Length: 332
Image 1 (cartoon, rainbow, N blue to C red):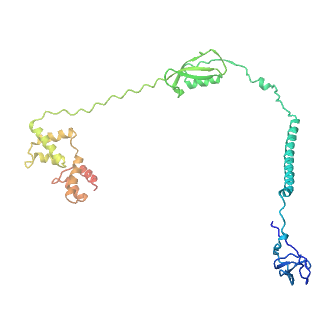
Image 2 (tube, rainbow, N blue to C red):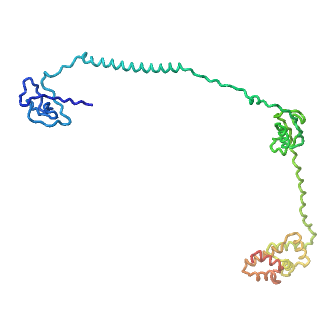
Image 3 (cartoon, one colour):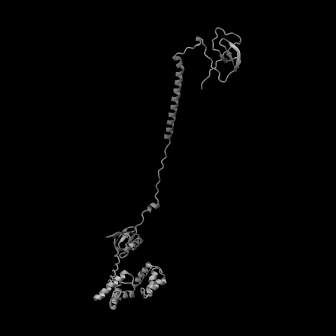
């Protein structure tokens, strides 16, 4: 905090300054005769003007008189105060450090004086420790030859024995498909409970696959009948007409025998048609469907009208059953 030095001057109101009175600059100064007020000094004497002291009084100006100047003290006088203070501060710091170290040694001494009590665990022998070694039971290895691996394992485990499977080929996974051949040690031998018995197994033979059914002989094609030249020609003509369009049996016969058609003899035409039927080369229902589609491609027909056209003696000459089959197939 900055210190404000206020100088008070004693004056005698109305009396002139003596020759020994220092000369001050004109200004307001605290009036010691009237505390709390200031009186104006005009540079030569005190005036009758006064006022209350302001919050921050003006610092007086040092006298102009050179004689009032103070001489700076020599270095040894100024350090006479600083040096003892520094020595005192050093003694205080050293004392504090010594106290702290003394306190620490005291704590260490107290800790060393205390005895650490070591608790040694007490080991007690109990009956449970003595019973850890169980009595060994001797068992006879049961007979398992011919059983499945699964059955043998259950039988051995019931006797208190462990099992391990051994196979010449393959890995024992599905134990129902493996048959026991023997055991090691052999059946009837004495073993201790918990011993491992090696079970030698082999995989069951796969069931014999059923013999494949004998292949059915392909149906023998009808032997080519011996044909005359006329018959062979009639067969070829009949096949050509059937490839060209739909024909009924009666219509094909008429086409083969007519003098405006092929002009074959009736018996040659009949031979050709019978031959095609026996060889499976003609289906009269499908021929009726083909004929109905041809009529519908040409023009529109009702069901009755197309039925008449398919069955008429002046039309296609299909049977009624064949015509109805064709009408149903074309959606009429």
